Length: 81
Image 1 (cartoon, rainbow, N blue to C red):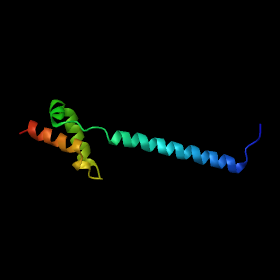
Image 2 (cartoon, helix red, strand yellow; image 1 turned 45 degrees about the vertical axis):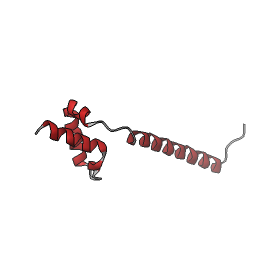
Image 3 (tube, one colour; image 1 turned 60 degrees about the horizontal axis):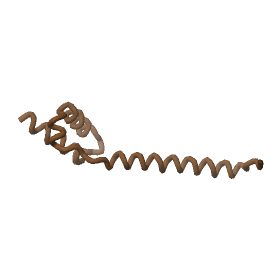
């Protein structure tokens, strides 16, 4: 068996790292595109709605406009009027 050169090892490591990065991004995209919970679901799971609302308010990237954040807030407003 032929021994790999230094350049071949570097290229193989780079390809492996790139493959890992792409796989991680695909998982992140799949998680971020999951369907939002409905207002009715959050009304039925009020503790989860409270946790989601806290998470949304604490996010520095202002994710308060995501469907989950809006639905959780709506459920809380409906439940505590």
